[in-house]
Image (tube, rainbow over all chains, first blue to last red; front, side):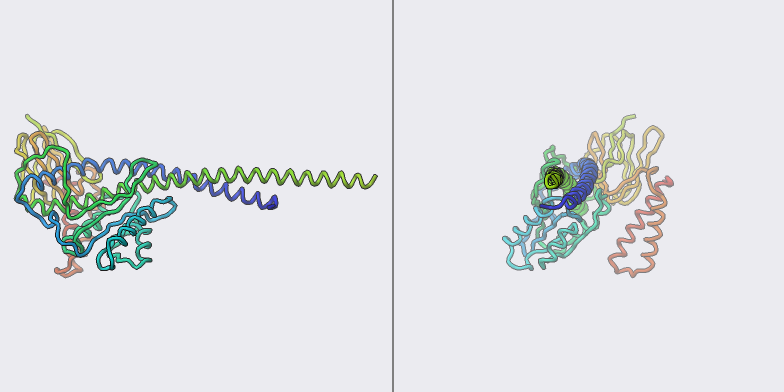
Length: 285
Length: 135
């Protein structure tokens, strides 16, 4: 049995750890609320741009654009969004496992795919396995502004345009609620499944539908990437909050059971001492 | 006078929302003025100012990477970034302008970064001008 002092030390250190996890949980809860609000304020833009894109792409039959047409696939791009830091439960590993298995299943050689990694955890994971990471960005802010992500988004879209890859999938963790996040695969490019729930409007184009699509489609794809990033940021904070909540609960359980054995050990020591005194006194008589 | 609803939306949230008598801005094909009752239209915008006139008062919004969508009852401007005149961080714009100018001086014309620096310069100048309401 561990000595009294050992148990006491373990109790103190577990208490300290639980204070930290509790603090992290509260920080994540605050960040999650903020991230959720960011995601919400992005919705009007996304809806509008989707509506306009759908109206133009579906409304006029005779327009075509490289980003709208599928071409024979020689190379597939994967955009993977993970976090920079760990301690978020299964948040990163869920996404990474999904991507990893998909790639293993779909491709035989590393020449057939290219990975764009957002987040340090994802980048390190793929680099360690010698997978073809062509672009990475780390240290994305917790509340990313569109300007920060514009660069990587436009580079990604540019790579599709110059045929570095012929299709692009996006993997991220979709925020359902504070306790549920689902790994989502989304085909980003070519933009084949544009649809709008709203009624389509027929527009006049200034100067022409083609010219507008040339500017609009890259922006649309960039905003899809930004939307996914906001979504996965919200998931990250939610996942971290849940993970830290669990850690705090576990620490509490551990402290309880440790205090129990501490009290037992203390009582045993007292009993032993009494027995010794009584024994000593009896020996004197 | 008749008015039309205008909203300026960016990925970071709505920037401007109001009823105005006239919207005027610079599209890629030239200066454009929209009055209520305009036919539905879409046009990409240049980096520039959007002027929103209402009852003798004019609001300015600096816009870059934007689109104008006109519907009979509403005008929407979708922009990658947009700021109202009094919300512009002028100091930052001035710094960005200097940085862009320096980069333009350092580099050769063929460089890809040259184009980016040029755009950055345009955006910075646009912000500064809008904040001074020089239109």
